[in-house]
Length: 307
Image 1: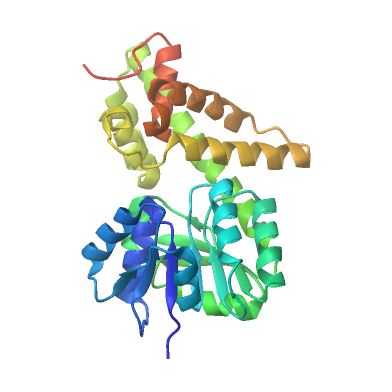
Image 2: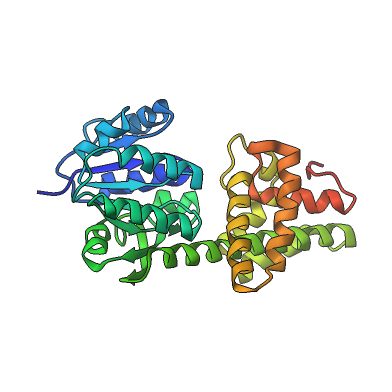
């Protein structure tokens, strides 16, 4: 009989990941859904079909029903609070699969607490945008003891993910080091696009030609972010795809790792300075692509690129 699954955290990524578990995984019971905002869990349950999902308002009750518990929340504070609640109950022999992007030291501490309580733990951060999560095209990074990783794998490649980076038997924190460093590639990409488009506009070249170049040579995330900037989505969207608060959290963790290793990540530092301006301009509704607005503004243009 297939294990009962509980999913905790229904942000942009979590909703897409749940969709693919429901549609593709071998489930013998409904996928349990828990979110701090209960309505978000109810809305997703209604969307995915209520006979394939079950909303659990009480976290402890949900954990007691589940064999494998997936967590994917916004930051270190949220995941620490979630585990503090979960580990107050009986968790022996349960498997925690932690997908949040947090500091490696946070993950190591969670794993230590979970295994001390008799549970198993897998560090499983994922790479990909919300659209990739919706399409089941994420890249999973799995670290932990082989027996535990093997219990998590059926829900990654071919279900939530298109590929896996297997770090079986490596320390849990190694997966998060890779995740944090991987996210600096996104920061660098957005910073480079923002600067190039601003130079193109101010020099008279025209942003359309830079966009044509990006679409033709790079495609993928580069093309998506370029379109998000030039189309004005970076300042028009009602809900950010990659919120500025989360982006700054990732930058903070990356700078911490770099400092501990005696390295300076200058691109990350520059991007974070621009993200601070996005945060000041738009608050928590700011998106990482708003770096374009920050570069425009410090270059003498309006933050918004409306005609």
